[in-house]
Length: 450
Image (cartoon, rainbow, N blue to C red):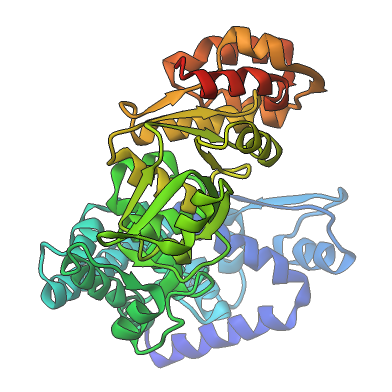
């Protein structure tokens, strides 16, 4: 295009900019061009203003009476050719009007896809170079789908993941800064052996900031994401949501000590060992036939949990636990205090390494049977259901009706031994409670009939 045509195009664009009645029409014309990739399609204006009606009537030489006006892009271009701006295409006018090139949506997607692919390859190559191809971080990034990888980038970069050539290097640097500490974490964990490392110490070693892996920080969220993905069984069970206790369990599973005292368990008749020696503080409770509370922090140095009897009984209700301890002073009993805490799971795992059997009893509702379903999966050879049969439910059933949310939880239970009970609860829509079975529970413990 020569200078004369350039000047004419500039004059044409200025003319339409001054006429406010064309503003909305030009925006819709641009959208159609981007959608079709060419000068094609029809524009429809609804709720037309008087200014818009007069402008379009004059330019298109048509009389519009309705509240809605429609015209094709071809018609608009033909009208343009009959003015002094003849020779200027509608595409040239729209690009000059908005001062940007018209790129079809299809071409935009292709360009963005190419840029995102370049970003992914660059990040993958950097991680492979820094940590090796056998580092779990390298492997997991390589196995991510494009959707999963884009979500990772958004987590690091922010919700507005608008990829252009100008910000490509910025995105890469931000993502690498966020995920590189995770590669260092896996290197440290790989060399731990049977040892553990505190979360704050791990953060300090990997980032220089002891709070970097706090749960509200980007690096902390990424650490949980990659740790969860590292263990397929854990991921399958917790792929949708991680509770506070799930997070603690995940840390412990990988040898990370979260410095937490909010997770606790209550024990009766169970000795805790630190190395070869039993812990004297807990021994004194056993001698007095008293139960004791111990936190996840207390348990960090415990190497063994040994029951004073071969059978260990696990209940969720604190009042039931207290009554069982009073009635059975020589029994080994654990109280999970409702939703099972990581501290309880840690003790249960230690007990499973000993020559003993564990028996779990809980309430007959979505929460109680979910715990039963979960706890059995930890070690089906050592952990058994206790008084959770159809007959036991009938004995314990109450007048408390279960809402849809609580009944929905029953649908996720897959232990074959629980399915018949689950079916009956779903039909009755009523909860059953441990308190109604206390005499049976006491009888079982004192007579070792299990």
